Image 1 (cartoon, helix red, strand yellow):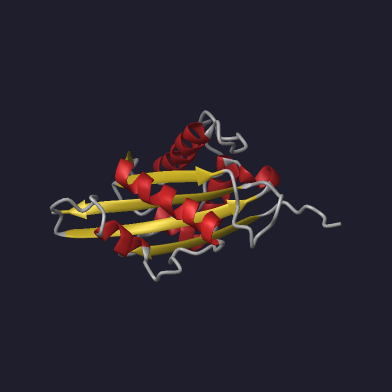
Image 2 (image 1 turned 90 degrees about the vertical axis):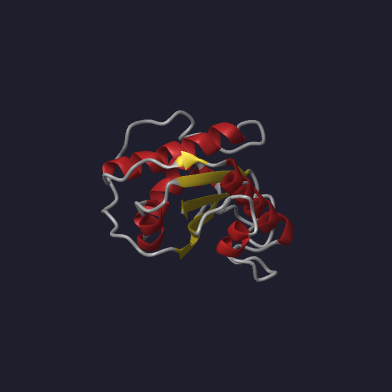
Length: 186
C-alpha cells in the first residue's frame, strides 16, 4: 500500500530581461475562488482566482496588473494538458519547443517587432493544489517571483488542469498550473 503525500513543485522559464523583484507580501486581499480545490467544474474560477492573486502581488509591488490574453491562455492550457498527457513536468516540451518558440508561432505577436515571455508552472496535491497555495509558493521562489513581478509584462494567460502527470503520482489527485506572461513591443 502506498501512502498519499501532498506536495507542491514549481518550475519556471523566462525569455525577457530580468527586473527587480520585491519581497513576497504577507497576505493579500481575498480573490474569489482562491481556496478552491481544482475540479473539472471550477476551472474558470480557478484560472480567474490565480490571475487575481498574481495581480494582487503585482499591486503590492507597485507593478501594474496584467491583462487577460486568450492566446496566452490557450498556450498555457496546451502546456498543462500536454504535461499530463505526455507524462512530464518542464517548461520545455519533449519536442524541444520553449515557451518563447510557442508564442512566436502563435497569433500573439501580431505585428510586434519583439515579444518577451515568461512562464511559471506548478503541480500540487492535497491542500497545496489551491490557487492561493500555488501563488504563495511562486512568490516564495525568487525566479518565479521575478517573473510574476516583472513590470515589462502586460498580458497573461492562466490554465489549470485537475490532474498531475502520472510520473508524479497515480490516484493522488491534484492539479497542474501554468501562467504565461507576455509583452508585445512595436
